[in-house]
Image (cartoon, rainbow over all chains, first blue to last red; front, side):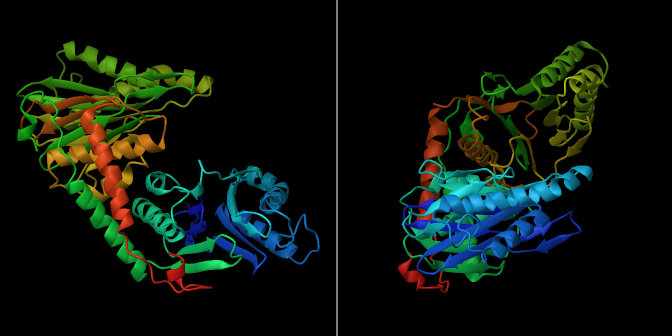
Length: 253
Length: 253
């Protein structure tokens, strides 16, 4: 399992991915799931991957090789819009499906790959897309300002509570890291190092790019702060005034 | 989907369940998923149910009808131990399986039901069990002090952070409600009213039993406290000192 997250706020975009892949507990590896394609000053496209590693690696390979082609419909660095960039990733995913799906089926394996594609191309605002196994995709909006891939549930509550369009870029990154912390604590199949990327609107280059290991001093400080903060909020939670069934609740507390 | 939670701490047991069941979005109903069987002063057994409602209702019905029998191996109010109580629920689940499973299969439906069974019988400490669709079961321990059924992931992070054996009974109930709050926010298939039950060790009767509606003043106050508390912890989170790729991070915050 993986966990990948892409968030769109007014100030820009934040992307994060863990780097653990596994095929059974005896086979756990670390691979990069966050890919950056850019022409500084003109465009930047970030791609996050989740699902079967043979599929996602081939998709990224195909996208990579197309960077040498002079075809705006196939080259991520020549497209006119982020919509077209998302389509290129989806088209390459379909090409892999056409080649591999029968073999997956014959072996009883599920063909499963999904992507988050986001960034900005000169002339457009920053945009964020989620691409499904089918190769089709949807775009983020103010009401749905983030997409998750993989092990999504543990890290969702904090996103639902904190994310909003006017949240600053750095706070959005912190929120992403807390979401990863909750996921890592709950599920062994998601683990550091994490890749984290911040993109500030209209910069056409990365604002920050960080690989965060499990001993990363800032990540550890944030984990501690969050853990202690939650415990303290919990400790100060109000007491109920429920009517007891058999004795006053004051005796229970 | 449902969400049910049973927790064992030194002071006793806490059980909570939502009450929404659904078979597709156009068919959402409210049913009780928390059942109490007791002989005040001698034993109390709480059963939480999740999965296919036709199955869980028939299991509870069978358990109920057996209360009239004079057989300790089948009557929940006559068993010598909580282990035997869990076995009775598992046996009744297997009886329903034997009767219904072929029809589920013929219609392409999954036979799916699970239970949490906990309580105390005179002569034993309080105990807590989780029963799977197969009718087999496991017992909670200090390392695994809680069981969840149904939509478990959204509400797990707070349990992992806060629950420990020496947490008071009332605080354990608060923790359960926060876990439900996170789940309800993230998933429309889990909804109030919630049923909540507190059992204090060696009391052999309920300490509190509460049905919590969406407008419950205490639940709303707890939700507000938690939401505001999290936001405040988040607002005070430390800033990173990452080295920026293209500009100092101080310009990003």
